Image: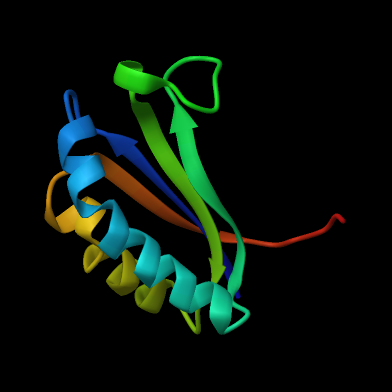
Length: 99
């Protein structure tokens, strides 16, 4: 099943985000290589694809996992969680209808 994973960045998390981003992206790439990634990306804090020092408000991933527990476990091991980029996060089941 598909799951929506959202994370809200902690205040002043940009430096940590930059530091752990390569490891975070590698984990996401593995899902994509397995055909389990629908979409992923950050949410800029301002209306720009490169927000600079304004940073990001969070991130969104829609990916396929065997269960809600597996999706939550995957997120719990992600460096954006373990290193404190996200101050809060959520995992919810998702049904793709379009396109």
